[in-house]
Length: 481
Image (tube, rainbow, N blue to C red; front, side, top):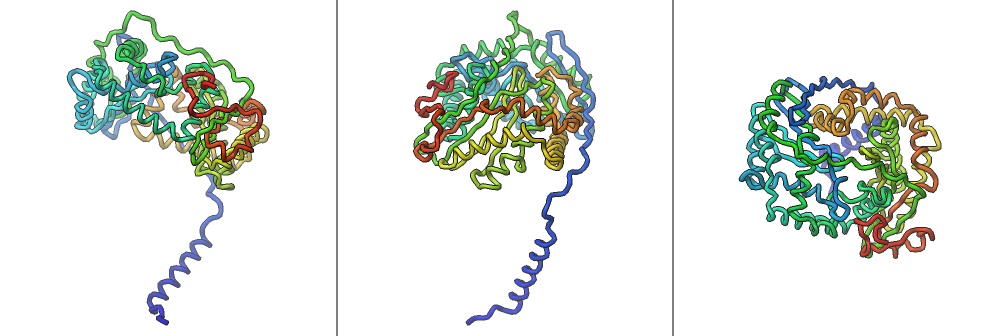
């Protein structure tokens, strides 16, 4: 028998000894959370141009970068009932051709400046932003102005976007977790505008015409409900001069501003929806209830409650569903706080046979958060995660612009950005328990399970609402049942 060379045996023994020593020295528990980070965001300077455009400047010298974000205080909540995705199309097409430039030429012009002209369309706001080096800012503003103020809305680009979006939807709708999440929004919000898919549906997108897009642009993209925010190496005087030069000629239409949506009708008794998707290899499981609007006084308690339930890898849902039982690659929750209301949702992707077990685990953890006080070590760890991530996000001009922009479009004092860490650290375990108890009530939770039901048919409760995915209609408040 061939013997292992002496040198190789010696090396193997050394590695084994080192690994053993490292394993023995490796801590069995994570380190204690350090002190909360300190953030100090410079005071924002505001002015308003004669056309109603609100200009906000946050000066951060030292690094020659500026993020410019133009936002309008209107989003997908203004889609017509039968044309979900209209606001999304209106925003996306802004950078797809304007003032003689094609979509490719606009992208190339932004790239030549070292940035990209990005469009964001969501709830309550739509916007265009770019980050460039300070010497390139004037040229970037010229490009943004040309693009935002005079989009072509070419029919060719509309059809291309329609085709791309429909193809993307077709692919997404084959994934049970995506279908579950979209259906849950309808279950939670019902007929309220927040319930429809912001990027549209296979039924709605073919109905959107160029005239629809042009009318939506005229109604929503107007200076008297727009905010132009500069964050970085720029003074308020420079920002005002650039805003006047490139957006001072922007005129508001004579029509009334879009009306903000009413508060959603409070959710009643919860329900379990089971949507059969034949051939699905896994089940998408989603849980949700209506929750906090952004301006509600208990927003911070809700933010911390969500962090404990499912806001990170170490949070309860992932601990129970993935780490302890291996039922999913990941389980999480999210608190979405909007202007008129909000939703608290949880989600996981699991094997078909374990879908009802995951429903029970989600329900148990949600209700437990409202019944039992959170242990001190768990509470402190989640506070540290929230405050640490927040402080880290503010290190870039883009992150700073995002935080302040969200406050601005929600009509919240911009100094709240400096108070976030103190607000989170002021929340008590009793407040988290009270918040969870307020929104997570027995019989009030909504669940949507999408998967191949033949694999868990015997486990589906008798009271579940049943639907086949072929009949699912996300444009309908009752999902087309």
